[in-house]
Image (spheres, helix red, strand yellow):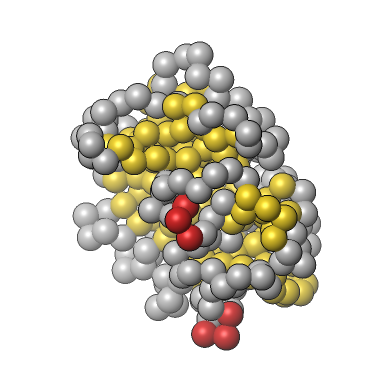
Length: 273
């Protein structure tokens, strides 16, 4: 993982190279939660990385734990796990002191997307039998109480991300026939805006919700981190677009990364599983 500034300059590595799957930056900008495989056991666990410190194991189930997501206050980490059969959603205090607790248990596969800033809601992808997912928002205190943010029978939707002000949820939809970044308001009103052009993936908000970064998938922007300027006040109407050019080309499986102030942390090369 490397830090980059808005001009695309490489600010240095966050940690030594290692193999991992999903990763999410903590709100304090100093810790990263990652899913690291154990090849001997055929499993994955959540670990916490911090620069210049040894990695700390966070989950211990002998199965696949992944999709770690920090709450906005940094006190909790949600994740998905196969420990009960289907991919269910769990939560655990970030200090590791308490045992993880189930959040959403069902027969369908689920991918953890994000927390609302106040911690009252989580957003996740609920996968139907035909491997097509919808975006669901559930109350953390009563996960059976849900809001269906999207439902397109033939189109997959994934990677829901709450904005820092809690007014918007960005997600990726294939409704147009290719991946695009979509933003509806929250709570939903029926309105929504397509933010990306010619393809978009892996949306991440700036902390105040005024900018939305994503990975551009268009032919003329392949392997670059794209960014969307958005005055997320009363509407998500497009104000401007700009592209972040990185010093090195990013392979297609690399992400837009996560934000700390004006800088991005990006996975690349040997870091990626």
